[in-house]
Amino acid sequence: MKISRYKKIAALLGGLALFYAPAMAAEKSGGAVVPKKVISEKKACPCPQVKIPVRVVVLTAFEIGEDQGDKAGEFQAWANILPEKIDFPAAPRNLRFDPKTGVLAINTGMGTGQAATSVMALGHDDRFDLSHAYWLVAAIAGVNPNASSIGSAAWIGNVVDSDFSYWIDPREMPSDWSTGSIPWDKKRPYETPRPDNSHNLFALNKGLQNWAYQQTAQITLPDNATLQKIRSGYPAYKAALRPPEIVKGDEATGQAFWHGVLSNSHIEKWVSYWTDGSGNFVMTGMEDSGIARAIAVLSKEGRADYNRVMMLRTGANYTFQPSGSNAAASLAHEGSELSGMQSALDAAFTVGNKVVSEIASHWDQYRDHIPAS
Picture (cartoon, helix red, strand yellow):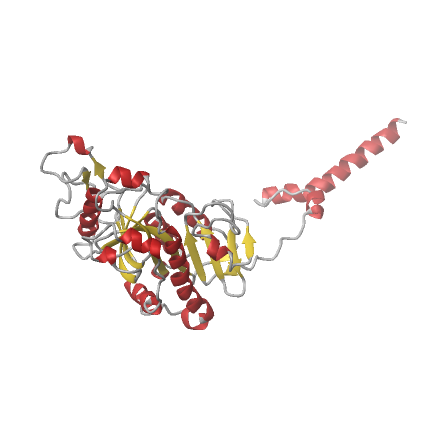
């Protein structure tokens, strides 16, 4: 009995030695220690995933309810023509995509911060190849009555961040100041020489801006009684009285939805300051400096091409009050009185889709060559 028991123990030890011998050898040689049982159950690695090639990314920010079938924001018109939904938890709603055209639409959410994080998440989503993609912001904005009119569309050349600054409450600022907003690293408003503008100025590809403008300049944007009524409140502003038009200009962008004559005067000077006097402030939005910064970073990483960024903003409201009103009352009634929002939404899709369709349908021409560059 004892001999038999010893034989069983020896057999067991021998089996364990056979099982662990390869692992011990691997450990000595610096390799991984993987028992045979684990090796036998390990599944083969899947083949590398083929990324989805994207030709154009359409970026919107403001949406109201569902993607389709109810009161529309900026995203819905694109969702109506892009049939596939793609799960994307980093943004407020799913992506929309058309595999036939290679057009992808994202709703980034409102504000520079949310827009930047949504774009960064998309840029690092390995399901997509964005290396040759064009990026188009197609969104509504406030329009400067000194530069253009409600319902109009503007192709943007420079995006100027209106948030990055020092700030003093106007009630405590020196009497000879016109604003409490001070450039970073300066001691008074608009102080020269201008500091480094990398935080405040995002210059876009002017050749591509001009090309997009030329592609759409002949589009006639509809006028209507609502827009005419709104325009009539600005008799002293020639640009504000014009029917809807397509123009080129610059955009101020920041987290705050500002309103009023004095704020508008400051933003005009702010845009001029950061562009060394060449800027023409026409539209104000809330996302585009965040979007531009995110794509600039993705471009450095080789995941995007900043030179392929286009921004189209359309005027849903004027940036300051009509004649006979004040800023507070005008802002308070922004959502309850006559509105140019629907006209601006229509213009963003009509004008934007003209460029999107041109690029997507002639991809062999635009994939490796940026127009007008």
